[in-house]
Image 1 (tube, helix red, strand yellow):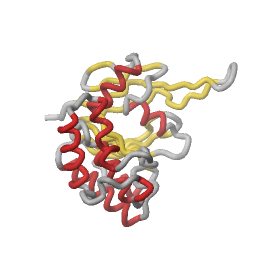
Image 2 (cartoon, rainbow, N blue to C red):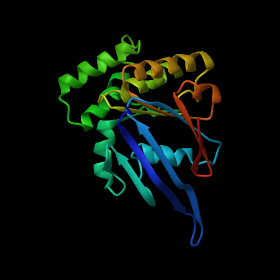
Image 3 (cartoon, rainbow, N blue to C red):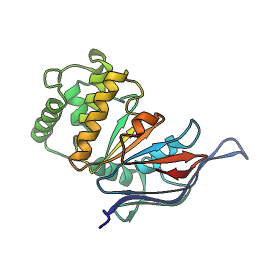
Image 4 (spheres, one colour):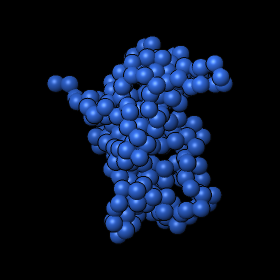
Length: 228
């Protein structure tokens, strides 16, 4: 029996206006199905539309044409405030640049997504401490990003991504700013999350990293051209 589809892109286009009469089609009819509990990789060269694909899959933007479904709900034309609530509950993000807030401690960075979902202070504190402990940073909770190594910052980002216990983890070039040893540790975390039942969608340009996934979707010129 096939697992339930959790995210579906149906003939999605994303077009940007560049100047008065110039248009750039970043996505050109991209279609993709992601089933619950899958681990998929999306690969493609520079300019293939990977960033736009991340924005669509992660509910960070809406398509120019086509439809996006999250758990069978069409989210293609929702307002930003509604999209923010959905992605806050359903999707955890891990970015290449970590995107931590430099003025906040590791603990405060992890607590932040829970504030937007209205979780009580005491529960936010307890969960953030637990998550940081789980990624081996229990002793570094009061350190700011500038006081942490790249690998430690990425682990804070993992803890933050898990703050609201999302069903989907979207990892955008998660090893891009890490050395090979730290990158391997990062991939072990993603594999562990997958084994625990999380749906993992990873965007990467690295063939070796992509082989970690159950399947790889190849993106070229704004559309999926091959699936392995």
